[in-house]
Length: 126
Image 1 (tube, rainbow, N blue to C red):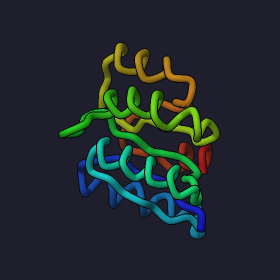
Image 2 (image 1 turned 180 degrees about the vertical axis):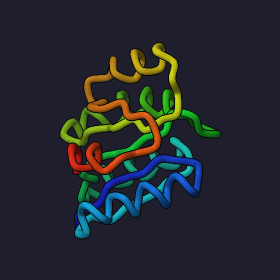
Image 3 (image 1 turned 45 degrees about the horizontal axis):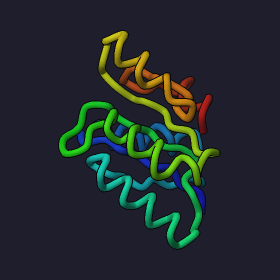
């Protein structure tokens, strides 16, 4: 089973992301988390069980509990050494240049995309 992760707290954004990706690639499913902590826990469980890794991770920066930046820190230390082939793609409404600079400083972050997501961007990473 091919799947990707969505780490996003807004239900409307999740729905849009999932529908747009299904329009481009029907054979991939999503696993969704509303905060970075739940996503890290899931990824650790994948590593412990040695099961299929996600194709890619779509990450919002502004979320409750564990935000996108905190997720990136935890991912770098706990997950990336064992999942270096899984790219992280930032999906955000943030227009702050600092946010982009910080996010792109992580070697595993491959894209910084401003919402709304469009079909051409999906084609690049699916």
